[in-house]
Length: 438
Image 1 (spheres, one colour):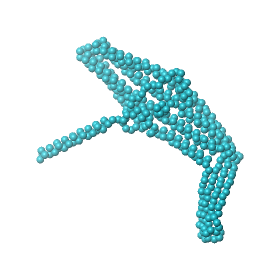
Image 2 (cartoon, one colour):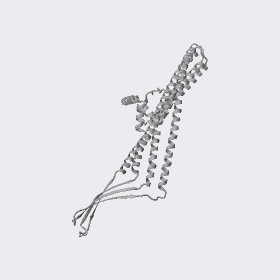
Image 3 (tube, one colour):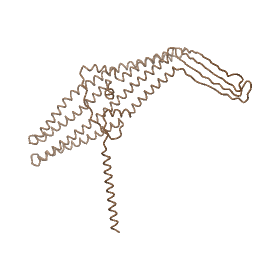
């Protein structure tokens, strides 16, 4: 009996172990599922579909279109129908048993100077203004997406640089251990190698955490919830010459959605002034009515009536309300014109600043590439000298520090140069055309 129990327990444990192994294998398969890979244009498309601020701007454009529909409705005559039915307790000559009346009424009113047409033109211009406002919101948002995308690439490059640095120092530590065994180095050289390696591993952990944070930031701004990877970006930068500066300024003053929007707002301000002045003009109302009345029992044939009328209203005194409205509209027009001139100055200055910043960083890149190449050759040379006893550990550490610094500077410069190029596209008003519509 005891032997049987032991066999049953052993068999049950074998089943449980096999179940655990199967669960582990299944879990490993799910964890090794390939992560979806996105390019920057892919992220642009995803972000535009999920961005609340873009959807809000799209709704503003939709509201502007409905406002135009309402302004058009004022230009069209209004037609209304009416009718009533009356039931009486007793039928007399004066009052039949019941009676019914129905009819149609047409109304139209307008101001003598075409106030309604002015309101319709304002609505049309407001649609264009909201369209440019939407483009500006998209541009700002997508620039943030691009910024996060390249920031993730910078963090990824930082991990690669830190990992290579750890591998170099581990290799150097192995060389130190070999020399320590044959007593070519003292114990302090090993301590220095271990300290440098420990610091490099700490930098690697920090770089990996920065990479996770950058990836999380990109996922948040684009609305991605699943695991993903990004493709390496194209780091080529468009070439510009110094004489292109004025061309870029003129292009910015024509293409920036903010200045287009403000230009339309200036036109709307003109219409608003004319709209306020229309309060002094007479308004005319036209109406036409058709009615039909029937009685039961019929004391006479159905009665049909048709009437038409015209009325005019002339403003005489309102306590200064119309004057205040006109002065307010004129003040808003002056504000818009001043804002337009200020924006022109700001855009020109912004283009100039970003342009010279791009030229500076572009010239620095070549020097940093040369510096990184020389630092790499220097490290390789010092490492070979160290193997043959022609250089000490301090020389190796200095060469490694120089190489590590040059790699970080070059990576940072590439990132900064690309971001500056995107800024130039944005300030000259071609960001969406070049990044989205290409």
